[in-house]
Amino acid sequence: MKYISKKYNNIYWFLIDGLRPDFLHINGGEGEKNFIDRMLEKGSLFNNVITAGSGTHTSMHAVFSALLPSYNGAVGWDKETLRQFRQDIFTLADYFQLAGYETFRYGDALGEKAVPLSGFKRWESGGYKLERILSNTELTKTERRDRFIEEVNLCSRSKFVYHHLLLLHELSGRMGRCWSSDGYAQNIEVMAKEFEKIYYDYDIGENDLVIISSDHGVILDMDYIKDKAENGHRQYEQSVKAFFAMIGEGIPSQCLSQPISALDESPTVSHLVFEGEMPMPGQGIDQYDHLYGGKCQERIFYREDAAWGAAWKSSESNLFYLRDGKWKYVYGTQDPQSEWLMDLEENQDYEVNLKDKYPEIAGKYRQMLKEQFDGAKSYLYQSPFAFTKADINPAFSLILDIKEIEKVTMESLLDMSGPYYELIVKESEMTLAYRNQYKMRYVDSFDPEKLQESCRGEWLVWLAENGEWSEYFLSDLYRYLQCHRNRNVKIRGEHYVAVRKEEVKDFDGDVLYEEKRVRDIRYLHRDDMDKKYILFGCGYLGKKAVDYFGAANVAFFVDNNAGMTGRKVCGKRVLSFDEMKGIHQDYTIMITTKAAYAAEIGKQLEDNGIHDYQRFEEYERREPDSCWESGYRVVKNEHK
Image (tube, rainbow, N blue to C red; front, top):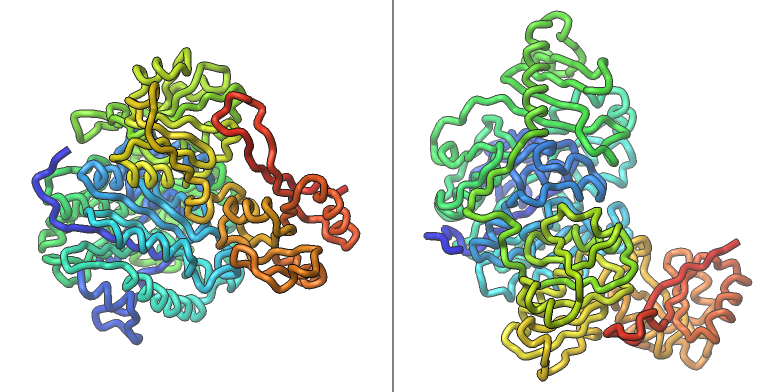
């Protein structure tokens, strides 16, 4: 696709998780200005943004699609509900990629899907679970973050970069369930200093657009769990308000306090960057005219939630919010006591329910909410282009030539980024459960000649049968294909073999073994990533384990050979067994020796009271015709 102009070379979007706009010190506000404040004063700040969803995931999926959660499908907070995000929707990141931008996404937490993956070609995370980041990192500084920023800076093409900062959330989490205003304010100052370092690590130029925003606010000075359980239906204003700022050439320095919806953010960015050439459909209102002096449109704001305790697994919202000027109306579909009508001008503490005093107003709003969210059931997404996502030619075809496909493998592959690949499978009871996924294509035969005719991707990628997939698999694959785009090569990765489609029948080029060039870690064992590894055994298998888990995630080796104590293997110090015993509770112990010695070492650990250990082992694959002769797996100790 070709567009008339790109007003900005690069776009950098920094999301500061959980930052309340009323804690900003701008435009003469009290308090010393920190880096965030000083940055926001350089551009246009919307400091009264009403979120469309309750948590980070629902809020940001709504922002990137300009659709309420019930319309875009992502109404809950866990992977199952996020997986329901509608595949036919073009996200803001899709727009940038279709316009020729390279697209990058980084999140501090492991596996965070704070925004839809669709549209992002390259992504990375800090590598640790939420609430484990600070115990494993220097603030949120990790080798992966540095590597990600370096890769962004090396990219010479126009780029869209989304960077999700969780430090404020992590710091505040240390306060327990009740976050105090004073502690929260102090944490913002730490966040601001860290953000300043991150900001200047990027090579941001004068002709770049910088976006700084928050996903939602937080509740302060009260027990969060108790408050949500008793008063969640009131939806406190400070937990639903966010901010959104744009800084760049030609954007006036101003603070705009009229309320807007979070759904307005992406349409406004799209108009600003593409100068109106690419209108973004959805339920948001383009605030471009308001940005340059026009009147802000009066409107009714809608928001939705899942009642406390159901939000994590809910497949549909059951708590709805309406804001009409001074009136605020909340209605829960499962609890009549959740219906509240509030006058925000007269009732700042939200403790007075006026639904019985003004039944006509409450009834009107109840009907409006019903009509709004009933519409989600019949909503038909209209693509702004002359094509749909299913029409986009994929970069590669993933061939899942496996007799027994695990559900988790299928879903992990289908979770990944956008319409830029297709998944080739044979019909089976399990695969047919996903027949409505546009990425899925069914074939009768995996014969290379037939695949060459039926597959649409430029590259054909055979996936190994032991596939333990993570969302980072495609990000790596994009890198490899881009690096070798013009070479006659076959790329053999840890879990795949890729070859250009026109060369599949009679390949005669170079074979690249990517196993040792994978960027440190492929996040194959997420449950253990909150602890680094101590590898028990310094030999061949131990060195393979360093490649497999990533050097950044290995703390030490340990070996029974006293001659190895104090030495370094693969850059990691070798501990004695006694040294390891003193610190083992802070790490995951992984036996990395041949099977003949593994049982003996396991007994040694058990005799010393260490039962929570694992084994890293090499094994032969079940399929002799597989492109790989052997593989690796992790086996947890089953302590009885």
